[in-house]
Image 1 (tube, one colour):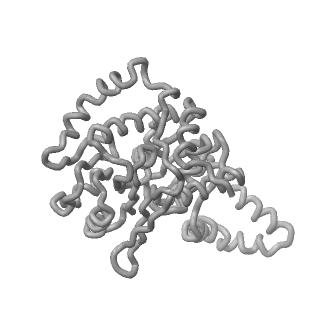
Image 2 (cartoon, helix red, strand yellow; image 1 turned 90 degrees about the vertical axis):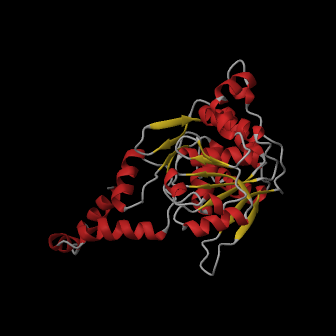
Image 3 (tube, rainbow, N blue to C red; image 1 turned 30 degrees about the vertical axis):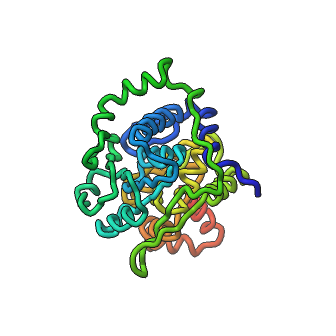
Length: 315
């Protein structure tokens, strides 16, 4: 299977889907269009350039599924950096280890997680950014990240005097054989181990999603599996962004009650899930219904049982 260039997939998608909704944070009513995501990426690229980040530098990201998580990931790979996603439920010692072991120079994190990390245990980190609003939470001595961020609007105006448009979306040229992602295991047999994934690895999943019609332009998905895991990341996020799908990001713990309410509101075209979630929905929603005394009697009657099951499936 011929795979398209991983980075060019997104350069083309942001241009072609400019006015379509891209990322929405569930329950917060803030939606980024593809054009607005591209603009945020351009802003972060200016920050990276100011800090003299080089191609192949590593940038870590840890936090709940949200639009800024996706933007930080996209900004890193389209600049030519290597993204290091970290599961948000890892304990601080594991996070310190992964950030140091991966030699990450920047960290994007939720404010809450940052409160539990110790900056002196992250000697290689040059800057830490909030996944709430991209403000600088910490900078290494001698860095000028915070000062640069204050003048970022002027820097954008100087770089794009006519305003940032789809014609300004130009990303680095990087072949698919380059490492673009370090994915760390859950560490069940000791410390987490980093798996080096290339553009070919990532483009293979995305190309599969595109060619099988898994998702299409203007489809909708609800992203609730952790984006730091390969499965949800590949299809809820990477494939979706490549084809112009609208991704709603559920940053809450995916309890059956929350998920079913979100499904009802978002009406996703595709649901990427794992057996545990389906089991929870069955045990908490369906099983109590079919175990009622009157319902058990009704389900024992031929023909009537199939009508009842059909109604349950519809709901």
